Image (cartoon, rainbow, N blue to C red; front, side, top):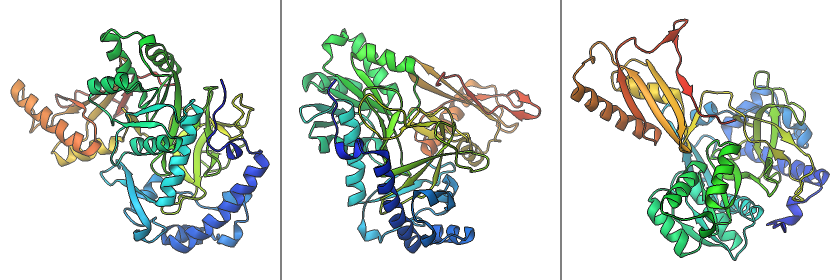
Amino acid sequence: MTQNYYHKEIETMKPEDMRKLQSEKLVKQVKHVYENVPYYRNLMDEKGVKPEDIKGIDDLHKLPFLSKTDLRDAYPYGLLAVPLEKCVKIHSTSGTTGRRVVAFYTQNDVDLWEDCCARAIMAAGGTNKDVCQVSYGYGLFTGGAGLNGGSHKVGCLTLPMSSGNTDRQIQFMMDLQASILCCTPSYAAYIGETLKEQGYRPEDIPLKAGIFGAEPWTEEMRRSIEATLGIKAYDIYGLTETTGPGVAFECSEQNGMHINEDHFYAEIIDPDTGEVLPEGSKGELVFTSLDKEAFPLLRYRTRDICVLSRKKCSCGRTLIKMAKPMGRTDDMLIIRGVNVFPSQIETVLLKEGYEPNYQIIVDRVNNTDTFEVKVEMTAEKFTDKVSDILKMEKSLAGSMKTMLGINPTIHLVAPKSITRSEGKAVRIIDKRKLV
């Protein structure tokens, strides 16, 4: 396979030259953040660090970390580093207690983000001759906007489908001969199964590649999607907090994702001590945005567990690779591409007059996540009348969807019926085999 590069000189840059570029950008970025973000300046002052102490990447470890808690505490404008009139858009994730994480973008931030997504599309074999069907959600979610912009940068004919309405997705895919599909892996699997039910064979489907992310997926799921759609399936990684999809992307080797190191510096740390670990170590992934203007996060703790590697890649790219995340250091679940925290469930239950006695059960059936929440009724709410239970379940499901952005199946159960072990209920049962 002939390799496509969007920025060949960057993507194949010698590691020592990349490190020099990263150091130059970091020095400017720390100065920018210190002068314009009082929240982070206070963190630096508490740690006794000044911008002049940071002379390059080797000094990065001196800086304080940022966590999701900081982002919530600083909501909405506390980490903004430019005047609001210089911002052209926001994106957002759901927050753990309803307080969202809002990320801001200048036009330059948008351009750099779209460049990163363009690199991912070209690494998947995309060119200006391709028809790129973007079936990630649009709106506050970053998926649709990022791949849409990247597709434009490559020069693809872009189908801005958003998610859902699968019959229409298939109609446009077949009529316009889409060659690249961008969506969550579970939705790709669903589209594949629907095509199969409609009598299409893999050789009838015009797609050649898929760029799938926003949720965990296994190698088995990859092979299944590839077989059903007759494509090569590529992983993509990103966080709203850093920019969105395109922080890292897979190449033809399909063995880890290349990080766009000229924009994002990655560290692996011990999640308990914060100590920076050597390359090849398994630990928590930390990102520093080297040139984001509006919302520049320094040493942001992703809570994702993974490994970094500079092993030579057959695609010719020298960008460091991150392994597929192997878990998390917090209790966040990713269900159908949506971040779900148990604390969100508790917030809804308490607001609706229930005790926080519940159990989250997640599974994957036919390559689609199922999401069930068992909730104990209080003595006051307890009833054995089926119609009343169904009415309460429907009401609670609506409140959950408003909080989470995703619709769970609610099962109300009798008081004290959820098993406790050592006095504490098992909150999460994740039956998916994701690693």
